[in-house]
Length: 536
Image (cartoon, rainbow, N blue to C red):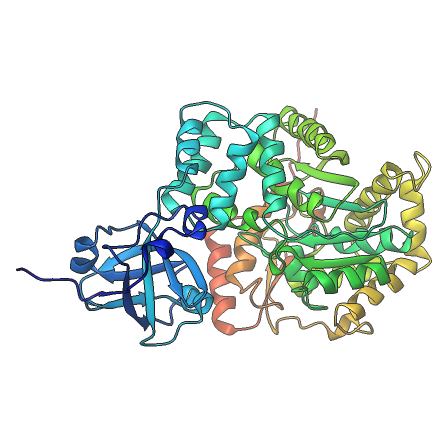
């Protein structure tokens, strides 16, 4: 007779097998004839997705192969998963559940889990359509993003989708469709107020913590600005990492609404809410492949703005050596795309091209960047960070009609000089659950310090943001909030032999050694030696 599956049949009526619910969710008939179940075996391991695994022989007897989709059911709860197969980790009659699946199903060791096949999603045909170089219609983009959120697409299929957009391009209509689909994948913030202001920087510049200065300036000016920010991926700190030194940023939507209605501003982690949820899933695919299709980047940024119902947005596009963009024409094209697509999404956008050839501010790393921010709001601090922040805030006030043309920057500076922006920032910190009275000398700066001194006299020609970020991360940033770098000189400054150019901070002796090795291997600062020429 041969080996038979030990998965136990579950008796159901024909009527139950063909319920509207099964049809609606695209399920084919249950495994076998009457459906099958297996005992849960829990593995307390994060798999990075909704994954379950079966005994190889038993899975193939039931027409299940690696990366096949299936539906697991426990009680009234159903979950779409991808199957992996194993020879030894689970026996016949068992199903292995990783932590994500265990949590979603609330499954316990030994509980019976019903297993169903899942029909091939229609979105695969649409991904193939994009691979063939055709443009996707609005409904097709919606189906892809819905299947993404329902875990019906494998990592391979999602990688094919991102690759297709990278190779074939994404037109304006597709970008708008993608942005709207991403917005619809999560919750939205509706304050029932207008205008709602927002900002974004495309990144690539170390330091550059302008958001934490712009938000309190705008809020102090009487405008609403609910700012969702990101954590670091390859940089030394994201805005969310830096703000978290002062206050919690993992804020839920209802709490965000309360905070913004009271203070007019907030700085929170976008990933902590169900805000434009599909974007985080797409980023996880894009990042390992280093693929950033322009249309996808535009949709990613603008979907987050639309999700908070922003009406006026200023976009910072730094260019220069070491930044993400070096070419002015490329930056101008991107700026125009932001403006045009923003208009289609119901937002008024101004894009500004800024100097990204040099880090902004002195600190690189969460606590060190907080120091810069507080010093600027206290009327001191790095001049370049203050100037850029006031220019962005002023431009945003003008864009929203809250400042006369040409007067926005002066109004922003006044709000710093009269300490209204500082007062507002401390109010926001308090409402987000932080200490509104925190002092600069109370910030948790790393105790291990290594100073880099000029080996010769000259002028600093270039300071590389990417390399500085790598060194700061070697020192422990952003996980170790006190780790990072302080720049004592910037491009164009004259230095003499033996003067300190930068200091590296770390919270551990081991990591400061890692940072020193990174400094020895890399060259973050280029020095132009004085040349003396005799003329006769």
